[in-house]
Image (cartoon, rainbow, N blue to C red; front, side, top):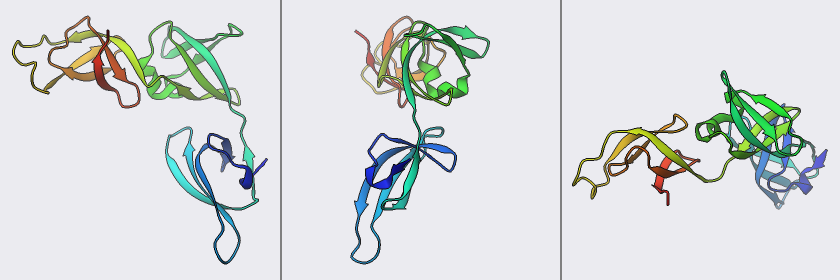
Length: 186
């Protein structure tokens, strides 16, 4: 248990059987009445941000979420096989546990996962990732000055929009938060 007076940003709580991470908190003492703590909480499973107010001094259940670094080895059917870098133990992770991170995984990648009660509840990816284009239509000469885009398929199977001058086989930097093209990789 943790008191609302001791909340810190990044702390994970178990509220209404949902894992929620404190994004922001502020202690507020109105002129009249009891002090309150206003919080913004991010539901770990859905990513939804909710605002919630608690009485000052109220006890909440803190959830201990372990962070561990794993290496993505390969796919086995629909599941992803991940290996813990410290214990070399392998575990199967369904696509639902990895969420959007599955769109950016290449065999051999290292990623940090969050584990609660034996199940993966979150994945931390770098803000950008370099991936190879496996298929895109050829660019037309002279069309490189405009901001027009075309679809391109990445080595992970994800389809993104890229500028017309990008060709198959090139490596590009992709924003893992939005899934958008950033630049050519050098």
